[in-house]
Length: 272
Image (cartoon, rainbow, N blue to C red; front, side, top):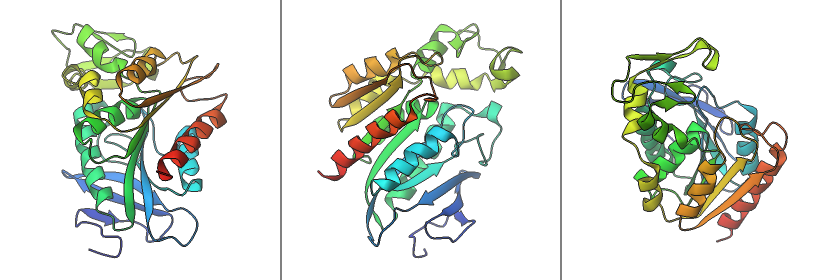
């Protein structure tokens, strides 16, 4: 172990202390990550784990804005690119929520082991928001609070009905390949994506997490129904819902309202 208390499965790419980019080797796959520390001379920080969405990566505008807001509020941030996305290993078409959750649990264990981390927080956007909800249900004692952003919870029930993000299929006889020329610019998904999604349940994950939750959603989101956040907020024990008026799935119009909500929430948590 080095001064960052990194386990042996971490392959360091850069040693720049406050802009540290590296790979985590998880089940033989490299997971690309970037660790940033807030300004100042403190030696201990809360850390926000940040997960992007379906087809996304860690440098998207809304992802970096949320991470920067956390840094300005005194949090360290750990952005990760999940299986088949960004600079991480794996083909996009072979990714599943199982693979994402397995990697996310390993990243959580890594982050908890960093000797400068006081408390762990979690956020994710879209499929990353769904992953955050599921991950918090799997490891409820690991996170002091979570922030699902426009969580794509409809993926799970859609898979059970035979529809994922507008693509229809027979849910009882899932094809080996899910694809369409008109679907997300002709991308492809292995049928295992739908098979895995059919077995996961947002409601069960929500029941297992009892900490504070902030849900943020644009009320003009045409990709993930606003109801995904509205219904989740009703089911959580301790949730706040912020709807961004007239905004899209990736907050193209009022991103500052998203970061304001995140900043206020994180300030409230750090003062407890």
